[in-house]
Image (cartoon, rainbow, N blue to C red; front, side, top):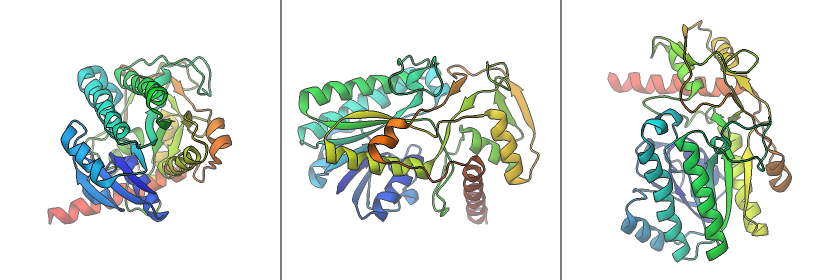
Length: 331
């Protein structure tokens, strides 16, 4: 298939692009490199562009004529979204509408959307399934709810077929250590912990110790990025075979607390790095754990890396490689 991938130079997108290439798909990556890196695009063709650039977007799609689109390009930081809501609505909602407008005009029928567990807000049950009420508690989650609604209405009006995958906490790195998280300012817990172990920051801040969880810290469902990547390919195959639009959770069905992650990171790295406890951050729910029964039942998804130490080990190998690369460039 010919697949147009927005945000394919970023963390999750680049892992999916690598897998698409391994399965022989023809890929075009469209990314503005605001947080991604061209070196992370290991398959296909790269075009630097922004979804707000309607002319370049339309011309690129017209020239490429993809069979399907995978949409990863978005702003994703919960805390930042509470400070800069307009930026999030502009980038995540308006730019998604630009993309949908362009692809439906061309009759491109298959669309895989990168959504989030933040759509659920503070769910009343755990694990949470796709039928739970959508009550986001931060602008980031609200932008994803809004685009899911746009997808639903566009599908009804223009025949678009889509799968929205609601990610829980994506972590880890490519098991081959070719790509991984490469944000200059890390916000993901595992990456921040590992960079503290390396000495890149003085201490790891843990935000909130008074949540209604077993140790007072937030609980999250951590899914390895390679398993999430496989879910995208399976979702696309399901969509092509059935033509049935749907929404599916992506997670392992069990959670770990922030302190669990800290302890595993210390064990994997062998470094007893300093930790400081701070107040809660705006927009953080106490617990988010996925019920991914639908994804498994409909697509046959069977995760291979449901193991927190393995997730942290792959991330640690990647962080060490990044440090070596940075050190070599300084010499």
